[in-house]
Image (tube, rainbow, N blue to C red; front, side, top):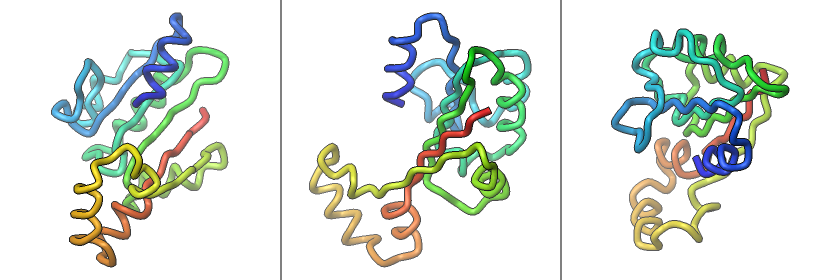
Length: 143
């Protein structure tokens, strides 16, 4: 979400939408993926979608896309631990989607060493560990 803050600070006339899986995941005012209908009407030039693979209602994505129509280059930034949901597969298949990926360990300099050691000891080599520690994605979807 640091990019959202940077973008907002450097583009003060743009409207940005932020969507998290639940309100509990939010630390500031944003839209919740649990309430797709709340996205009817708001318009944005950029959307940030956190943990899209965990969204309960895929229609939240569709409602968000209807409002992504402002500015010269509207786009969506998605940060998610991937799961092979139909929505994730659909977004990955879109030719306008750019995917970057990395692992928890790529971010080691910013994380507590004890937490990394604990995660590695408990989950390295497991299915959950392969998905959550080794294969995180950031997706840029260009409308």
